[in-house]
Image (cartoon, rainbow, N blue to C red; front, side, top):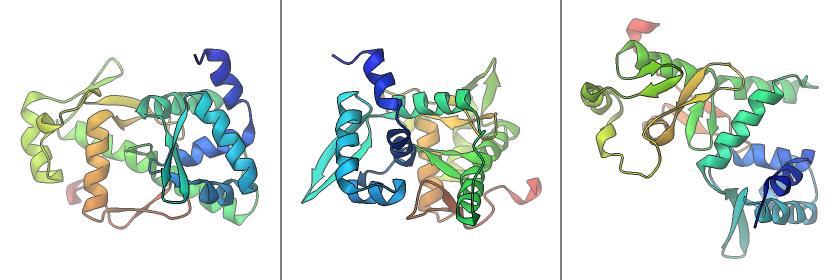
Length: 220
């Protein structure tokens, strides 16, 4: 049985921490892709993946001849985001590539299955301003009369999001220090923005490309 010490031990390695950061993007990643992103040998990645799997932080599945890893669930993503808030944003990027990567992550990124970064916080602000979301004592709630707004603006009805997960959560953004939208609603919003082309996943990490302004014209 996994205990806190097992989880802490699995996290207490910079390479494994970087791998988990890459997996925060949401979609499963092959071991080879993780090796390239983290900058280590594939054989080293395999050993680290086994450690993370034993700690209950990831799951590994076979897809043909490839072994793919992904976070064990949204609860792991939320825990990692909370730890990132504790750690802060104190590392200083070195080199143009690292600076650009940091900037892209700050602008828009996937936090497992919902939108984070400046874009995620701006989206939360938009929903609050339109009365489609309420923030009370640090917790988000969806008003009963907001279904029409979500149907018109994003093409889905929050009351149809049948899931065991909470409908909405306020996830503290580790770069913006303000909440973005998580939970089943956060996933539905990110899926809708990707489906209509407003956001696009990048092949090199969990940063997202913003193809057009997702805020209404009256808010510009």
